[in-house]
Length: 141
Image (cartoon, rainbow, N blue to C red; front, side):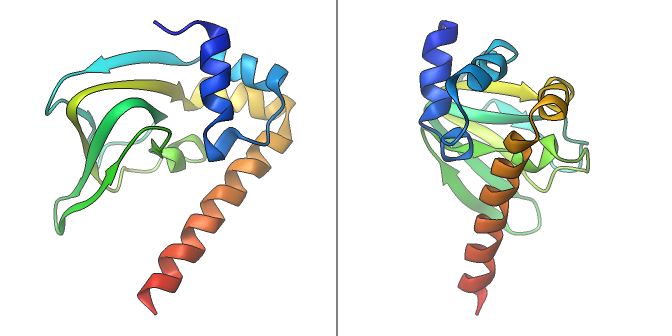
């Protein structure tokens, strides 16, 4: 299990949270849940309403869209399900552990409370999401 300090250091190393001050990251770290998964375990189900994002501490995850197939493999310091902390819409893909995986889970409800007090955190997340959208859109041209 990671200590709160280790969680803060990890969060600081993830693009989504890199610009957030340490004391705000400590609040986020305190409400995360550490999960340990084995090969093939599913932690996101396509079509279910999202209520959390997941940050990969160790290992990798396979992202699978049922109508397309595997669309990505995500590794350490990457995240999945980040749109779910902004809305509670149905998930776009399934996600499975590849080998042994350690994740931090951040639930929308807890994150909403923190964002209400610190709107700059929401702005940072929106920036990362719009950057990803620009990259995805540019690659289709």
